[in-house]
Length: 316
Image (cartoon, rainbow, N blue to C red):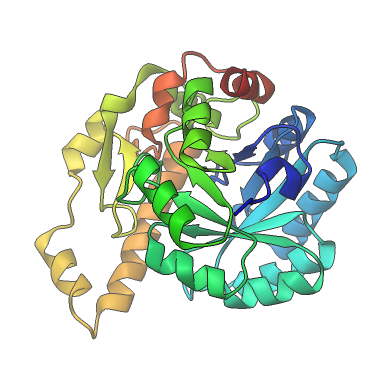
């Protein structure tokens, strides 16, 4: 079956989405991305209020150029108490696309379809891919085991081919792309495009600390480890001395609470709040408590560069 390409779906020049990254992604990065002919995406949760979210959308609309596109990421489970209001704002302002994560995208797809917004859904396996296909998503974001943050468990080639063979939806590969050879490889596996995050952390436009950016230059793929200390769910971080000191596994009490039906919900909420606070401080200010989220593709980051130059390095 011939599937539309990412460039056709989003009317962009190059088959690349700048992945939504908590605290990192912002309008300046996305505007530079659009100028370079790609799509950019920002987590709605990067904005504290709905007014700030709406203002960001209006800024992107006014800066949009031909060959570029912008969207927002929604966390669609109960942990995001702002979800319904954020969805309403995105639909009212008619963003180009929405990427859903961590929950059922049913309501998002239904509401977005009413106003012509494309919806792409994060999946890590065939089971969830079949579910979002039945809900009539526009494409699948196939999160593989080379992605940063909350990654999947399946290698890119296997995951892309499995989803292509068993669903009718176009596949956008997320994880493992840091250069042109990686991009070409994902396309050869059957992806229509790629979602790229970690290489953009050390961009001049990112609103994170210089220490965080420099860490993505100084460290490499071998320095990425999985930790349960942020949300209770394994997440990739740079293996700094502080991460080594605190360890990457939950302690016995946290494991007990996570496995207890009565306390599981609250234990995860508390762990998420503690981990989120640590990540926020490390990303935005100088601190010895360095918990920096990143994926193995920081291997390709050799300097802090403008967003457009990072894009050029990947597509050319």
